Length: 150
Image (cartoon, rainbow, N blue to C red):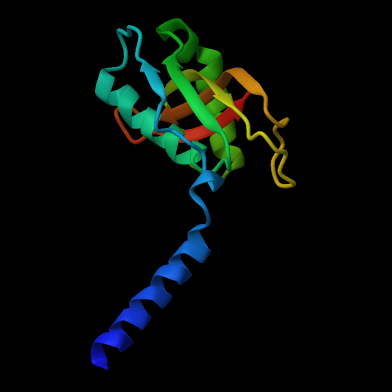
């Protein structure tokens, strides 16, 4: 009798978890993403990897999307005076202390869900290319995802 109660309890907990999480296809797929680090005289592979992890964390929230690749832009694209200024303006508008000294940017390609969802701004069953991700940090601090899109 005790074993049956434990079994029923475990099944109930599993059903609750499945109901809360939802089906696997209801999250963004990053399982097959190809990473292109390129070359940088500013950022190490570890620096880039930390930024890419943050991008992936954001992407998995995009129901039904599939991320194909993420690629580093280049050093000249990232740490321009204009980009650092822009990152600090974004920081100030979000209540962060505007003291970023570094900016890193990546392009990505992904596919949107085959069916349009009411809560998504993506066109159904479409390929998005050169989607840009900007992250900023203080010297060797933690990356903050500041903005993304076209």
